[in-house]
Length: 148
Image (tube, one colour):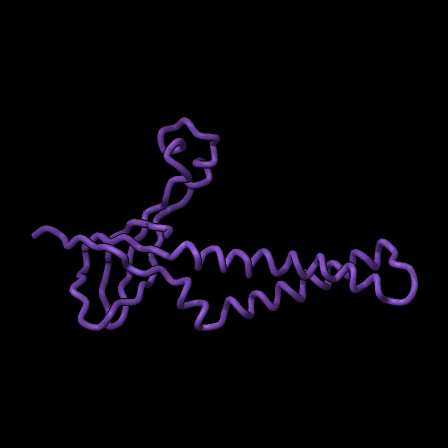
């Protein structure tokens, strides 16, 4: 599960606004001994996201929380976002080869681009369905109430 830490800024009926701090690329980068990918994360700033809350949740503004998205859902989203367009591009070439006449380089490029665009549009439509959006929304997995 991909975990991020944050703090609740406000609680509304059915959801909370959580401020999430930018993450580190890896522990080596955090220690300054990494490959440099951590420099990409240094420019990130805090984000505020909307997280669903169950009715009667005891959470309040100021509580620290951990947000998570199951790894299987992240993998599924990556397959839809990257795998399907790649597969569409690769499958378009043999299909274009079935057309009468020679498969010229410009025709192959057009076929691959058409396959990529078609599969990309399909994957975006699939990922934007409410069911998919809900599965990819972070959820509060743990919380600490504020002292006081």
